[in-house]
Image 1 (tube, helix red, strand yellow):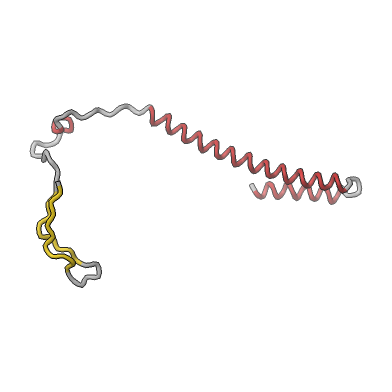
Image 2: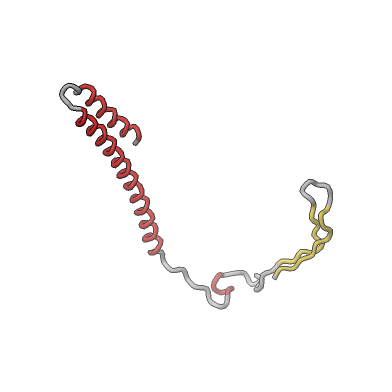
Length: 119
């Protein structure tokens, strides 16, 4: 985009230089100023078009995700709705019994026999 605006300003400058005998200084300055304003407006228009396209992509995603089918809600009995095996635990949890923690530099244990129960 910068190349296009530079070419436009360069073309206006060359036009002013080659037509210096038939153009007055005020018209030459006006032509150069308007070419720079036009290139700035062109850059702004391209930037806004890209931003609009980005916003429309977001809208398309929202519309697409709003049309997804609703998932089936699980009933109170989790084993029937998810087809879990019979021996699957009903409650979650973890228990650590006498877990050693080793220091990162390998100099030995940071804590001995760590015990923890998470419910």
